[in-house]
Amino acid sequence: MSIRWRLLISHTTMLIVTIILFIISALLIPVAITGDVRSIKDLYTRQYALKPLTKPEENVFLDVKYLAKKQPTQLLNEVTLKQFDQQLDTVTAGLVIRKGEKVVHSSKILNSIKDVKKLPSFEPENIKVRDTISIDHKFYLYVKFDFYFQDQEKGSVIIMREVSPFVELSRSLFPLIFGSLFLLLILVNGLLSYFVSKSIIKPLFFLKNATEQMGEGNLNVKIDQVRQDEIGQLSHAFDKMRIRLKESIDIQLQYEESRKELISNISHDLKTPITAIKGYIEGIQDGVAVSQGKMEKYLSTIKRKATDMDRLIDDLFLYSKLDLNKLPFYFVDIDIFRFIKDFVDEIYFDLEERGIKITIENKTKNILMVIADRDQLRRVMTNIIDNSVKHMKKPEKMICIHIIEEKDFVEIKVSDNGSGIEPTSLPYIFERFYRVDASRNQSTGGSGLGLAISKQIITEHNGDIWVKSQLGVGTSIFFTLKKSK
Image 1 (cartoon, one colour):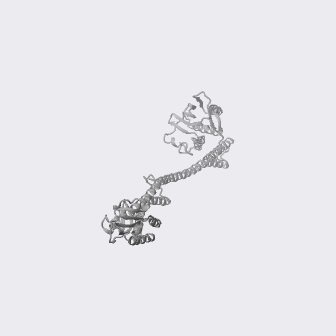
Image 2: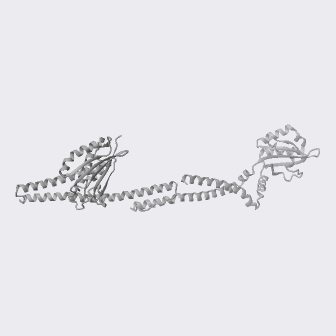
Image 3: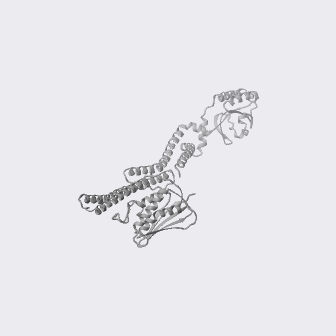
């Protein structure tokens, strides 16, 4: 249940409880005072029995009382009675004249009273002249005077005003009822606020404690919330943030370890040729290269080592630009078969000199257009081919490039019959500076960045790259390119 609904229900409940308590208080107060349920009606009656008349009622009552004593026949005069009715209309009261067992006059406001038996009984002593009476489930406050007409027939003048017993009782007991309701309202509101706030504040305090622990570096504090309201959603989002933050820190630590390893690898790969260059230069300076042939050999070696260093620095610079997304790509539509054929034609004679045969296998006769950067795609093909060449040890060396058409992309497969790769090394060959040869021998491996650069480039092409290999059989590297629409 949401917090909004909880608050709505709590306030509605508080209102309903207040109304119920008000009604119960209005009914129980008379019972508490008298000790009898039936005394509720009697208490209303007593309240009105002591209630004085209003000034217009009192004036009319004195006049009709005087006429009843001195001139009772005037009470049958319509003109006189009309004047009395007009005076009583201002206070919503009415006059009733009873003669014998008949009502001879009744004000318009009291037209519903026609039954003489419902009126107060005749009492010549006039002891109980003020009281309340219930007629047809209505309460009336009345004052009456009983007398005899000149023909000795019983007569009564009654001034009546309809009143509400509940309103009058509320007025008389207002301080007590108000005080009781106020205290009960405070109690109910306090209890509802306590339980509602407890269901809100308790999980918020838990989140606060979790935040403090995270601030101290503890990202393992788990936030378990089964609630489905806003607090539960907040807790769930907070826990997701904690997990992502923990993963981010773990990745950052991994990056730090990779950075240290990267620096170590760069230092090793640069120091090895530098050490060789220094050795050959010292040999020349010491006069070891006494012959022209030996001198040329030393200089050729120095040049080769310097070229290796230059290539390593270029690869490192390229990888850094790719890693920082600062290398611009120029995507165009390319006929992939024509592109690969031109590439193979360029490297064919170089591979042939090394005893390597390279072929192209195209399984479709359609013209396959892909979206790619020509220069960067050429770099990918060069890196993959170079990787295959370095691991060729069999007498018959073969490389085959397969072009496979799929629905939305084209798959390129470069297979060789080299020595293959250990299964434990397969997950890492696209990582920077990773070499299957742990000794990092330059004769069996390059900079260790070739395949890492290829992966970065294919990723920028929104493609995938992966490898399959079997020891003693060969290695296949796959990558995909999106078709041009």
